[in-house]
Amino acid sequence: MIDELTSIVLRAVERAPQWVRRDLESKDHVARIQAEESLAAMIADALRIAEGAAD
Image 1: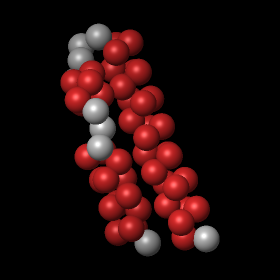
Image 2: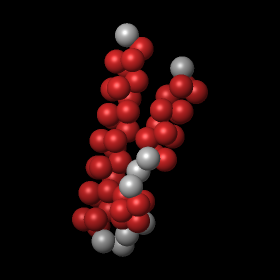
Image 3: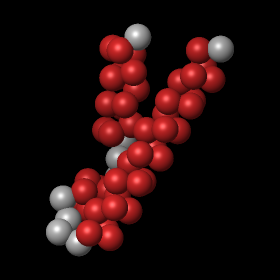
């Protein structure tokens, strides 16, 4: 189960757009928070889709 979750999260992170990757390293607090929230939403969506596929 953990391996499957890790794989899902890894695929979501790999698909993250370049702006998210860049902004995660930003010194700009607002840009970094927006990137973190975007990545979290991408991961949550990937997990939701995987859960639906498992049903």
